[in-house]
Length: 214
Image 1 (cartoon, rainbow, N blue to C red):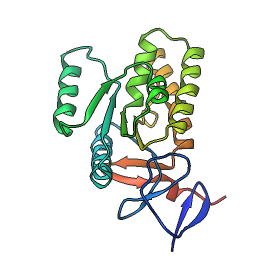
Image 2: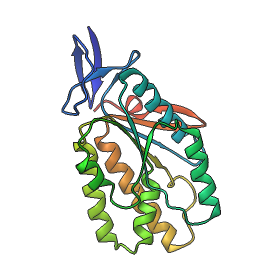
Image 3: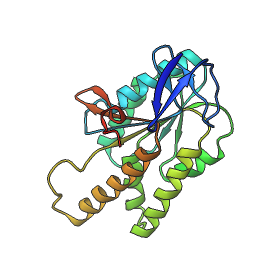
Image 4: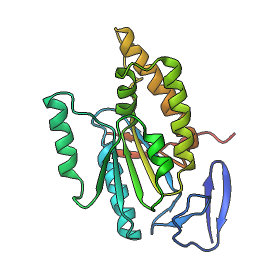
């Protein structure tokens, strides 16, 4: 028997089996009980993408399920092109890359085949929304729809995002708008995720285990 805490509730696991559904069933990866929706958050160069890729690779190795890398980045200049190329080189060549810079929620809703999905990242997705000219109201609507799709997704899901609100207040209105919107997006995503991992200098911290017991 194994006891775990999930969203504040202690559960006893009598038997564990691999199941690809997201409707409350648990599976065992050899070290810990994983539930299908994980959120990995950190600052620039904190190791969040590397950790997310390692976690997905480990899970794929144990389940033999395909991996879909759901990329939100857009090539805007040579620097961005180089960054994307580095990410592509660092991940396994047999992973399927899907470029979805605007409507991640629709892609998640339409996905029918089992897969381990790595969404990298929310911060670029929000950036795309803003530069596409979406209003604050439209962005809030998209955030709500995205969060519903993330929570309803039936297969294994790892989501990556940046934390940009711990430095000084940005000088320009556009940067403040972006910071505030990303903070709201991250809060809503973290609220529904079963695992919330905070990356510090390449080291993962399980945020839910650090929180107070209410």
